[in-house]
Length: 562
Image 1: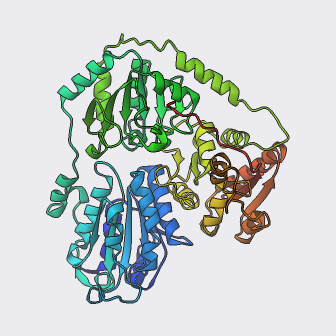
Image 2: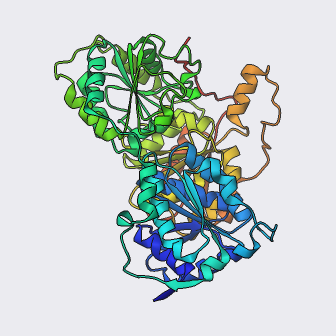
Image 3: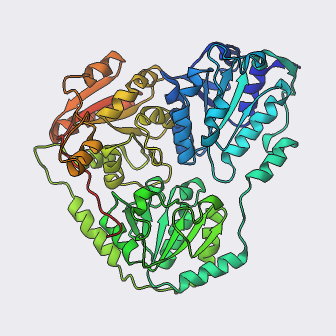
């Protein structure tokens, strides 16, 4: 049977398990959008308000579900609007498949209307990209795209499809072959995406290193969540009676209430995690990249410790911090084998020291009622109201760090945030993607007034598709994190970080999009708005709470080295 390239694209996506596409139409992808009408019972399209948020929505879908997220944009400005979202996914190792249209093949390279070399532009920020030059290759390329996105260290890929490829016809097997069994180029590509594997000798050496330590600490990153290794992480930590410190991407890898979880590590981390890193004699780094926000001064980070680095990506080994030993491979398998290789009677010298420090920190965080609205109160009360299954999304800034510090995360894939790229405007699209991927889980977006200005148009998406997302905007009429740095480092010279206190009116804006909004200024009014919002969510409607906080509310920092 002869199918058009557009139909082959959609059939290939469906065969690979895709059920949702986030996108925005344009002239060179009209063939694809026309075929979407024929496939709407098998794959849904979510119309966003801006292509950047299509990429962020695909990202949120992928982070929260573990499945690749799909976004679609037209050529030229449509394609370039995806770039920030693709880069965000790349830095945080998220499997996103970006599909772009382009001008017909004879027009490529001729400065045609809305033509851009999106493959060249995205080359540094994708695992791989393709320009489809023959409709007969399209199915195989889509199969490859899925394979590359999820294999090894996950990440985004891009497929650029010229207009004449989507309209061209070719024979297509509707039943077809399963993508994981595809032959030809896919098999060769799989060889290129495989990572260095580990051997039993590596496990034995690592076990000896661990058993020789007196104060081991596990530093867990996003790789734990990507590999589904949370159970193995907790098992190893309990076997070693070792504190676990978490990167921003690692939040939720172990429950924050677990006695061994010391919390966020790094510039804005907890005192318990900083103390653990300073005192440890062995740091077991699992699925993390030693970001500068974690290490601060590389030469002083964990200066009394040996480093055992475990990661799927060999490029991360010794990139930022020199390791004394490393193992490259799947974290789930490695941690499982390590736990089996360590004697059950292993003892250390922590003597619950970190647990005691953590207990003091929890006591200090207990809310005392005040007439002012504080971030910790907002975050902790929201957690109580929505429950343990909640997926938490943030934009970037002070509210992002407050959330990491104060929210009681219980489960992996429950915290979605642009950790490496720090993308303002990430949150609304990501929250929509998370809700569509997890319809039975509550979703809350914590944003700031600066970030919300960048993505508020996506309220139209939430309302159009009846996505019950709770949006909480911390409104301090400032770019808070930058203002905090200006106060500390620039003698309170606030250049362009104070936002206009007279606009926009976020509540009127919410109403304009057809959503409900509440402005709150104290604890009592917040709790009342939270109760009303919870009822709206139950009825399938989004809600917005604008929480007015003090302009000089700060994020506390606890350096891991001094």
